Structures are given as structure tokens and as C-alpha cells.
Image (cartoon, rainbow, N blue to C red; front, side, top):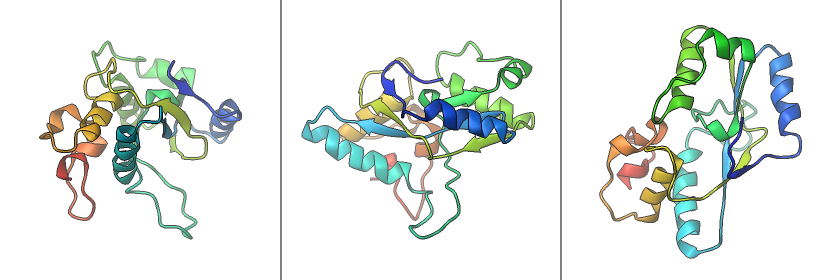
Length: 168
């Protein structure tokens, strides 16, 4: 699946199905932010990327990046696995993370890959409270106090090594 405000690379579907052929029940890809060009977006993208890529192995390391992100904009789930866990729950927000948590809890094989990133809109108003748009809006206003309850789990936890969105 992907989002209406996202653009997939030419080989996106081929890469998704290649993971399925290797026995994965779900594929979680990454995103890249598309910019409209104003300075605030560029600064916010830099702050986003500093947080987003914090778990990526250093250059020269050949270990694939098992990223922690869950994006409905770049997710593939085998129909059988989707049905076994009951599909998307009727949640106001976080239904993608909930689905992945249930797939993981039931032993489904999940690939986390950066080999086919999706370009997605850098929008500041979104449908899902606590979703990407809320995170980006918080990054556009770096001096505003941060409310960890509105950030996706992968960006809300503090780290002594690398500051997260709330710890700038």
C-alpha cells in the first residue's frame, strides 16, 4: 500500500514482491520527504533526517539497515497474513503500527528495508493525530515545547547519544 500524497519508485512493486518470494509476510519500507521549496521545510527536513536515520549503520558497513519505521505509505502485507491478524483495526490513528505489531506478535516474517523508499509529501496537516504531519509540524517550530504524546513512538523516546525531536 502507499498514500495518495506519495510517489513510489519505478521498481517499487517488483521489490515488494521480491521480499514476498523470499518468504516475508510484510515489507516495511522507508520514506523520503518531498519539498515544496521554502526554507522552513528544508530546515525541518534536516531535523527529520537527523532523527530518521539515527539507526542506520555507518558508511562502509555492509549490514542492511533494519530500520524501526512503520509507514502506511510504504508497506506491503500478504493477504493471508493480513486476514490472519484481522486486518486494520478501526482506530482513529496508528492503524499501520497496530497491524505491524500484531503481525510481529503472531510470528509473521517482516522485512524492514530501505531499498525502495517512497517520496511523500512534506505536509503539516494530516489525517492521523501523532502521524508524520504532526512530527513535521513540530520540526517546523523547533522552539515550541514538544509533547511526546503526539509523536510517533520511534521519535518520541529520548536518547543520550542522539537527540530526538523532543530533545533538540
